[in-house]
Image (tube, rainbow, N blue to C red; front, side, top):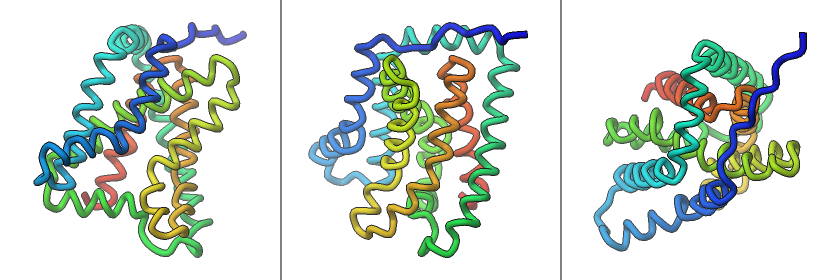
Length: 226
């Protein structure tokens, strides 16, 4: 029996473009503004307020989209939760294989993970809020809703390729600028980028990659001892 084709989950065109345009603001513009206004911000505080403002802005921007997809989650909760769990198990398997393959080439612990752990030692509550709640919401709206959703209108494989690549670059570029060897760490984010896109496309519900992202970040933080 042929699987019933789900109606596409899609932001409005202007919402996708706005979510993508928020990406450079999230990376540089808003943190720069915060530091200009409040020079005494700690790194943990700067990250928290950047993600908190981004979560508020993107939620308001995409409120109708989030509400429509929440209705889809409410209609098929077991299916969507099952897809999020299946994506998580696939991601764990992919990460395990990558760790074996890259062990000889990676010079140290993933610098992004190490930064999170270091910040958690002095600012645990805010780092926990970022990792488990704010980052999944902000990053899924920017990458899956924005980048993937916009490009999928024209070319599905281009959407996968560029969204996965952008997601990997987002997590590694600042470290790779100090030492090119850190570009290798981008490989660790490619399975996550792909599976988050897949879970979104499979269920046509943005809450699926958000839940998968939340689950992955929570388990990863606990496994790292954060």
